[in-house]
Length: 168
Image (tube, rainbow, N blue to C red; front, top):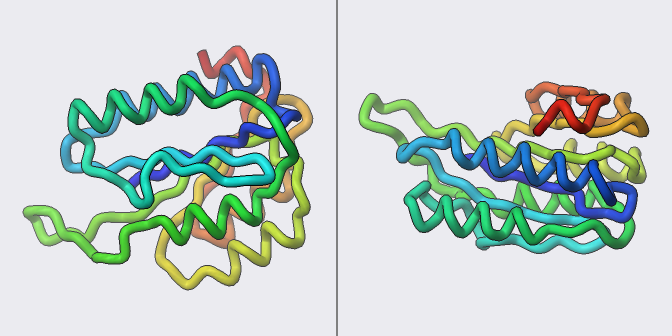
């Protein structure tokens, strides 16, 4: 399960949101038929494409990319709320593939990381699921410390992209 969590706050306006959309659409294109996908956009509110990840079919891929293309920058940034909602939107069943391997649950958070750090860290620590969180900081104003810490808490990895045009 891959849930793409895109920051659409006002600080992401312009090239940053365009780069995040480009990266998210490219990830959706790379998912295989054994994967599941969901897209969640957040600012100071959270909006989900679906209530939980959907198996990647041609229709799901098209719907996800269409949803991504319409995400525009607005509002404030509440990473804590995004994490709570996104982690809570993961499928609860442990599905295994043909080899018996249990599917991983992964959140990919694309953001400039400009949010209340302590509440975001608490949200990451309080969730008891096995979902891993990978954080991608886009642009020059990234709160690298916060995004690194969130990834470490959730057994993921932080990636920093200073040149927002490098995503395209």
